[in-house]
Amino acid sequence: MASRDNATILDLYPGTFNARSTISFEMIFELIRRRVERMLFGDGPVDIPISAHDAIDLLSGHKTYIMPPSGYTSDNRPATVQLPRDLWIDEKTRLLFSDMATSVETPSVIDRISKRAKTWERIAVDYSNEHTLVIYPGASRGLHISSPNPGYFVNVIWCQKTTINPAVFNDVGVDVYSAAQYALRRADFEPVIDPVYTHVLRVRIGLRTCITGIGGQDAEELGGTGSWSMDIHSLTFARCLVPALFGG
Amino acid sequence: MDGSSPKNAPVTPAPYIPSLSTEWHGYVMIQLAKLHPAHPSVPSMDVSMGAINYLCGHAVRWNTSGTVSTNFMPRTVLYHAPESAQMDDDDRLLLTGLVKFPTEHDMQYNLMYRIQDLPEIHVVLNTGYTLIIRPSANNGVVYANDAACFASFVKTQRGDVSDAMISVGGVPDVSITLKKAHHPKYALLDLRVMDKHVVAKVSSSFYKKVGPHDRSYDFLPSRILGKIFPVLLK
Image (tube, rainbow over all chains, first blue to last red; front, side):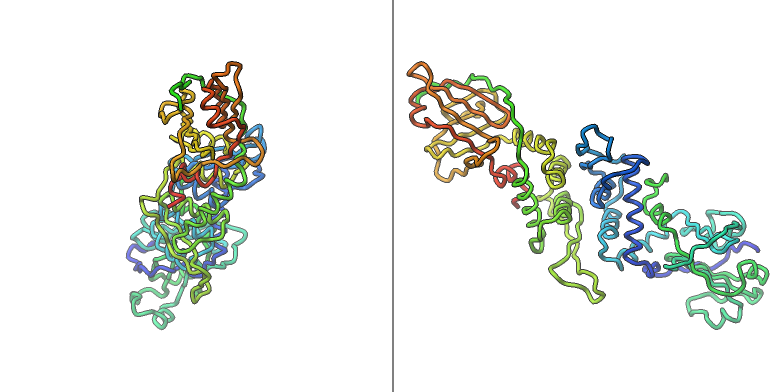
């Protein structure tokens, strides 16, 4: 399979993660909250989890009182804590987390996360038992094969796995069409593919879609014609939203 | 009032355990719930923390009363506090502590220290006199309004509002005891304000006007918290 620099990358509209639900955002925020807890108290068990308000306040750079886990202080009194400055978030992210934690404004959360997706550094999703897609959402070139290259939007990596989790939210969509199928289904704003290609690969994530022509051999390697959906793991979402909290 | 003012009586520390718990917590929660820009809310931890964030200048999303959008999501509005209503991080920490851990001794001591930072506390004695306490002053007692003295007894002016009320039990925040001294010309004033204590020899004429009595007072949360956090009253 050959790399395709000249693939067409279309910028779509906000709301691309529109199959995401309120509960999925709560789950993502829960991971962020637990990570804040780990930053404060380490890996040990925590008797009284910190509240969502506390997590957001701490990420905002405020000092707050926390009831520490047993053994943190000899008399189990509230401790004043503050996160290091490099973990502080901006005001827009604060409001986003607040909306995620309190389960309001889900459509707006979907739009805001979709808009942010373009700035995320790297997302890896399980495509099949043999391939992983590594996506660099802001990259300008199209398709790259065999090793992750940050200059390319979609990277197909060979990676043997045993199980693939079923997709629920369809954050990433991959379609492999024959040239004839694509000609029938192509939307007006989608590019016309050179007839030298027998197949067309279409990959969608967040705000962007990558469309490129591929050969029959490449299509076979990707599993033949068909459509596949993948979810971005909650942990990946959380890492993309606050990279510093997850080690950069 | 005669001119003899024992203003050099030393102010000494006294054993005192603050007990500023339930009533103070309740007042803070109610005032924070009133801060909802559109309509007062029912006090709760969520509302209190939202209001504290609002007072700190953060954008806060609040539900409007009982309305839902066409997609059955609660209808919310984003609010920003005006700059004049914003408070600093120290105030925020104390207010957060009072909301989250009102009965913890640390919070009560922190509040006590903030009360001691207040420039003046007025206690209307209902004897025609008002006791003006200046917690950070160390110069004892005076029978006139002296900014350098810990306690000033002045005639109550029309419109004076007390920051304390008669104590109903427990450890009082302010206690005043007047006793006859051995010398007929003098009496002994024993004044305790939180963890500060002063004993002063006062003239018997003052004793006759103001005492004799033993009185204890507790600070009024609405008055004191209003002085510590003026934004709560806006």
